Image (cartoon, rainbow over all chains, first blue to last red; front, side, top):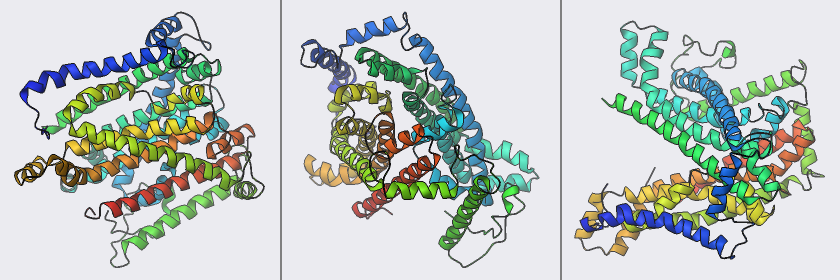
Length: 265
Length: 285
């Protein structure tokens, strides 16, 4: 990375270790001070210690019907089911739209319109169509995952090297072979990028949906904490949401990185 | 985007849309814009036809699940005239738009300067970035319950979450934009004796502008999504409020109208931002 401000070698340790640690430390210090000194009531902002204790407690005693890990698992299950569904429908549709013009022209405009509806706005129809049970958030997550899968698979297929595609066809590759051996590999990095973005959207939409409907999951946990006015539970749940979100992002980035490396050669 | 082929019978090929044999014949003339308009209109007409047939004569879908065209029209007129969920359509839209614009403005005023600072000074970056990275994985939507605890169900809670959602894309993209300013350009300016203030204002910020606008576009989308979520969770007014009241009433027509409004306003806002972008960065295009 080009150093714009001409950092000297001596600043290296400062920038690499001291300042980051100082940054994190000051975040926690301000947090602990704000709640510990009584400047902000602990009712609204419990200190880091109280939140940690609450997390430990939540893994032992059920809150909002289940233990923290059960809520987490419930959220993950819903997420994975809808993520797979969104990918399985979205990626092929995007590839088809990128490859076949009639498909693009027919579906493209409708898709463009639907894309501007935030996934969370599907909650009402999700409730009307799928009820308020385990399935309720599925449509919402699907909407989040689906559109970024379509968009990225589409541009992957569009950007695929025309010459290579035509060469394959000239050499007698059938439609199926062209698709599986040429188009999909060419579009793969883009497809995986779409999956990663979709996973982020999907996770966030799931939490949003769980705030509104359902009786399990991390979103449900924090909204229950809110209605019982227990901010420790709310913040503990937020920490869990953040950890899972970061883990999903990390896994997807690893996969993406591996594919990009293999394709780079 | 190149679209040189036409497909006159696009409405008829629905049964076998994937058939590559129907590539259509190449056609010259007839600007591609009008062609796109035609196929778009045809696709829309087809959709309306399917909607009409499924909810009307064939009764494939019950009106509790999805409204028929008259249902949706009735919901729209009802929403405009006597109003629904405590206010008329215009008042709901005004409330939602006001909140988004306020949150977005605050995010611009905080995210961009902080992004510039972090992109410009390595020390500030080293100090602030870890804090930011620690908080960022928590989805903005997950802040909604806490902000309700802090601020109640009124405006300030929503402005806060909207700001939170819009803040990160604005900051990240500004940061990358400033970081990726061409080193050659900077060196050249330095050689010619530019002060570091001039370097920032005349070189770094202008060259980062396209990336900054990319961030703003993502911010705007995030704002709109979080606003709807916040209004769904708890509110007295706004498009999300219509959605949640209509869900309780099992009024699919009203849900449809509110969703359509959300989509249309989303499109309008991003078009507006695009127009501003072209004004601010005339050299790019």
